[in-house]
Image (tube, helix red, strand yellow):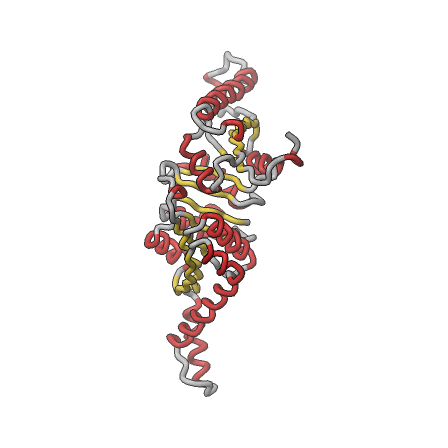
Length: 322
C-alpha cells in the first residue's frame, strides 16, 4: 500500500524472533481505545552473520559465506511462522500486517518503517531486568528513544494491561522546556481521549538550585530587599512554577473536566531522577510521559537520566515524545 494511502494512526511494533504475545496487541488496542487500529509487526533479521576467528577455525571445512547466507533466511522463516501463528489467534486480523526486514540496525529499521507508513507511534516491550538486555534489546530501545521522530511507547513485558481499566493514572514529567511541551500536549490529549483519567503534572526543581537560592537569600538581606530566607524563596519559586504548569495546560482544562478527568499540578524540590522515580513508586501511574531532550549525551548509556530512572523504577508503560 502506498504511504500516501496509509492511516496516520498506524502503530509500528518491534517484535523478537519468537514473535509477539497476543497480550501486546491487546495492550496497544486498549491504549489507542480503537479495536481496529492498524498495527504493523516488524522483526529485523541481521543482514550479515559475522563469525569470530575461533569459529572460523572450527568451521574451516564449511563454506562460511554460504552458512552466513542461509542462517538469515532460516531466521526469517521461523520469525514469520511465529508471527503468523500469533496473528491467527487475534480478532480483526485484516488490520495487522507482518513485516520482516534484513538490517544491521533494528532500531533504524523500525524508524524507517514508521516513517514509510506515517505511523503515529512505535511500540516495543522490554524485560523488567533491563541491564540483562545489554547490548541487544536495550540498545534497540535506547536508539529508538534517541532517534525516533515519533513517540515511542515502552511496555514492560509481562505487566498487566492497565489501559483496560475504567480509570487511568497518567504522570507527565515536565522540565518546562520546549521539548517537554510536546509531551505535555500529548499527555493532555491522551487523557481527553481516554476519559476518566487522573493527570499528575509534575515539575521538579533541581536540588542544585537550593544552593543558588541560599545565595540569593543572603544577597536579599544585604541589599535590604527584605528578610527573605531560603525557605521563603523556595516557597515563592514553587508557587511560581505551579502557575507555569497551569498555564501550559490551560487550553485543556475544560475538556479534561468534560471527560471526567482530574488534573493536579505538583512541584517538588530535589534530585530530578529520584523524585520522578519516587513519584512513580508512590502513585503507580498506568502511563508515564516524558519529552525527549535534544541533547542526550548525559546520563547512563547515553540517554537522559530521568526517563531511564522511571523505567528502572518498574514503570509498566513509558511514553517518550520527541
